[in-house]
Each structure stands twice: as structure tokens, then as C-alpha cells.
Length: 183
Image 1 (tube, rainbow, N blue to C red):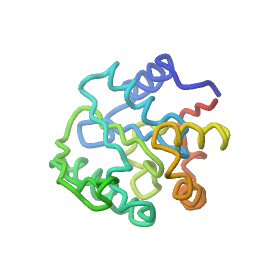
Image 2: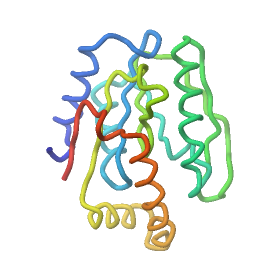
Image 3: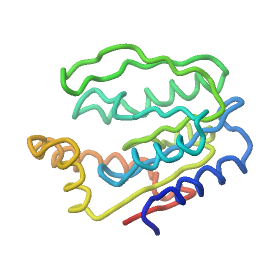
């Protein structure tokens, strides 16, 4: 495994474009893995290379720190709607206000990138064009998250880590990944 980079994004994009559309007339990339492994960075790099791609940050669909159990159903509804060629929508969770905020529209398009913990699930695996798994050692990931989001969330992120491990083990996302990257 290699550390995600622009070359990694090119690898993901080239693989995705080499495959037929799976999400209606578009393609779906799921970038999954534990918190702090580089998913958001890789998604941004993919969009830099393919500006027509749209990113949905899975964190925006979570109902706060305890939102993982309902995530798969929300994502399945989103991607199934897009696969039918219809616009989809979700309510964005505002982590600062600790409540749902505005509704975000997601029109059908040539490429959708779902990035975040739990972005891949067996219930819509047939709609995924490319599945990517990122990982890094736990201490590296924790340091990245605390640097990004602030030391005050350490108690929540430690509890979250347990829930995310259970969720990711339950989906089997790593074992279904087309591409693996790690640091």
C-alpha cells in the first residue's frame, strides 16, 4: 500500500473511467476507511483531476456522534435515487450546532464520490464503480483528527473509534475494495 497522493487520485480516476457507468449514467466512487486515514484529501484530489465529479461527505449525513447505525439506509436511498436518474437530497448535519441544517440537493451527474467512514455498503455494492480503502496506524489517525478538529473532541473521537471499527467490520468494506492505500 502507498500513501494517498495525486498519483493515487489518478489511479482511482483512471480505474473508474475504465469501467462502465454503474450509477445510472454516472459512476460512483466510495472512499472508505477509519477516521483520519486521508479520505477527504483523496476525494479532493479526485475532484481536482475531474471537476465534473461531485463529492458527498458522509459525515454530513450522520446524526452526530451516534449516527453510524442509520448511515447505510440514508446512503442507499441517496444512491438508489441517483441510479434511477432522479435528483437526490439529504439533510446536512451541522456538527457545531449539533442538529440537522439545510437540505442538500444532489443532481445525477457523470461521477459521484462518497467519502467518509461507512461510504461503502453491501446493500448498494452493485452501484459502486470503484471502492477505495484508506488506512493508517491508529496513533497517526488520532493525531490527524485532533489536529484537524481540535483536542477538545478527543473523548468523542475515542468513543467514535470503537463504533466505527464495529461498523466497518460489519460492512466488510476493506475486503471489497478495488484499491487499498495506507501510510
